[in-house]
View 1 (tube, rainbow, N blue to C red):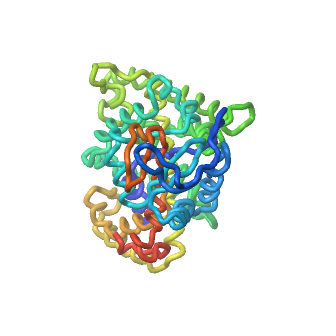
View 2: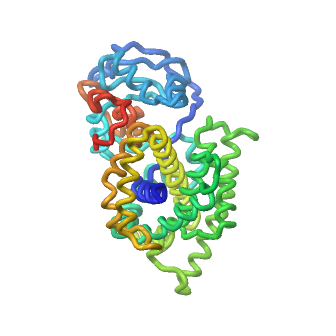
View 3: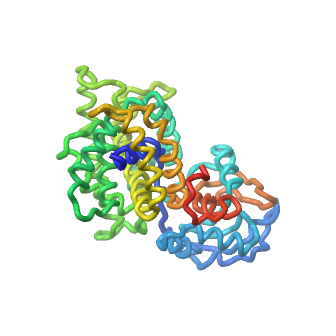
Length: 416
């Protein structure tokens, strides 16, 4: 019961976020390494260097992530250049890295003013609808829809369903097992949950038809974007077409069900997308809706499953933390009658459990960071950032910074 309650609260509390993907881009022309004294008419560029031709410092960047310490790439260079902003060359692009809470705040507060969201070009082959406008515009549209769908009032309606799904998941996948491998189980659970909440897909066979190609697709997002037969990226593109076709059939059936009164306009985000027009009165096409649902399934499965997996890891390794969570959950259980599901008031009582979840996400951040692109020349802390530069912000470099979180490797839920 403890794990059921904990997974339920984590699943509902983690925001949907896209894992923004990295790949190496081929260019016909490239710049050689430049010294840290390079200047523009507006002032000096941030200190740093571009690394190797074409590759830049991408291999160092990716290697730090593969080794499980993505913050090392950023913090090592912050120390080397004695600057919280530095210049580099990542995923085939000239880039500046803004480190620390002030850098993150600067980028977020200047969204669509000085910077905009940026995605590597390979993403358009996975999500073709973005080629008809832009990945940035599609992302803005989706965030607007999610804002309505993920309001507290809307989330309250799903708590009981999520609790029931969690109990079923543990009964089928965990109970009476001598050993369990948590990450695959967590991915199965969060994928089933995402299918249910976003598109009301509950039939196990239908979930299975989506799940098999979806696993190939999800793996390809972290592959080098070379679209040749047999490559992981090529397999991912093919898998995305299969998933999209299945989603389009679900969307067509939902249109029929809505017209016949068999589906509710407020039952999930799929209905919301079908019935919501833009400022010009235009409704989204089926293909575009399928792409957006696909993106939500990716974000809803991977980031939440990583967080859930690391929660289990830390609870297993730290008995005193486990005891604190267990005691809090048992107090909530005592107030419930047999067969009662969780409700919103129960979640509000999980203060220590949520602090533990926050500390887990600090130490094992599901999304280490994402990219932006400068849409105008601007200055930051005396450094010139030219229009077109890519900008990377790092959550992990903030979470592991001892000036912000003393003893950053220590697990301490009281920070929150």
